[in-house]
View 1 (cartoon, protein in one colour):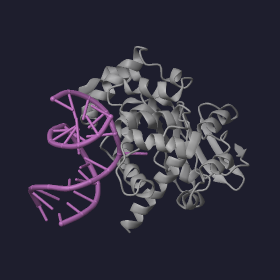
View 2 (cartoon, chains in turn blue, red, cyan):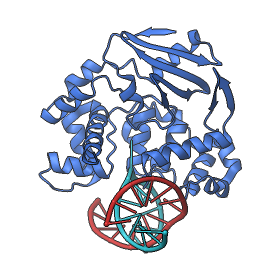
View 3 (cartoon, helix red, strand yellow):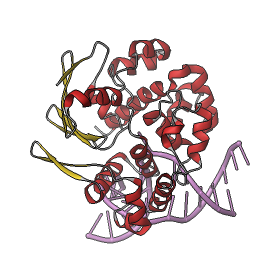
View 4 (cartoon, helix red, strand yellow):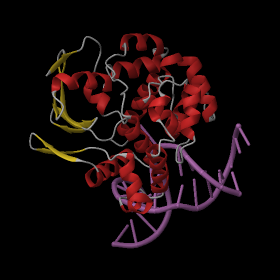
Length: 284
DNA sequence: CCACGGCCTGATTC
DNA sequence: AGAATCAGGCCGT
């Protein structure tokens, strides 16, 4: 099935921008699982083409558009955040990159795992958990696995999670799973809360601090003003916008919301891409 | 509030 | 080769 898109959209940079960890590229096709469905998707000149299973494409199209945030007016976003030469350049290089609207549960676990880790390892751990604990299904000759439900991770327990390679994060994941499974943490309710309130609520979860909370809010709960600050982002922002000083998390966050406004999260995503590129170039 | 050290583990570096 | 070092932080002190 095809979907026409009349706004800037770049599938590759969107799926490979380090927001989501379970998409795999095979030639021009990307393979992944959303809402328990296998998805194959590729970019076309005027939009995207995709296949889904088991939910039929006619039904899945809306879900996929929602996931890819095709409802965001990217031109308007650019007008809001294209404020200096650095932003202008990184927008030019990654034009069409979008934030995703991921499933909050999977996103929460992914970013709890991200603490003191790196993208390849987060990916392999997420994949590992899905292979061992998720539902398995076949689609067009490939094997797919859903991400395990909270109840499943509760049953597996901390020791079981450690055995899957989560390290000291196993305890956080086990506790977070418990909170979601028993209904003490209702992730979808955070979507309708104001940013500040949702941010604090998420930080009650073990293993979730300022940065992880901002990631989950930005990548799955529609808080586009969230501005996650990792060690690189802090260094970069300090260097570029604070005259070589190392500002605190709160300081950077306040600055970002003031400077970039309600789309600060988009600005963060573009700056982050920019610095990843720079460090990749550095390694040759 | 802010600063600091410890933490699982796998990949990369020296 | 085997030991540091580092990685998209968090937590307790």
